[in-house]
Length: 133
Image (cartoon, rainbow, N blue to C red; front, side, top):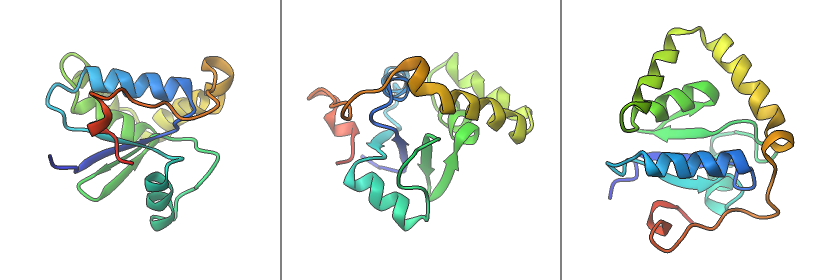
């Protein structure tokens, strides 16, 4: 299986974990693989690309060696999901600074609103092949 679409997410964030589970449920073509930003694989990726290795404020998509963050990542991910969720890509018509403004508000308050786990979510045996490390 080709690993050209990797989603890096905050593994202790309840919103992020729910989002990953939503993506898995709506990715019938199995396009995505996942890694928590806290994992060794995630940390190595962040270091190699001069990205923050703590205090995460964005989901990150690596697709065909391109790095997408914040609303760009969310829209790009949505564009690959099953219908009707792929229509969320229409939000790309909004200017990036507006999309990222609202994205940042949610990201800044996600622990307070949605909570936080003490450790990263561990996928079930049948989902484990979708996760790197």
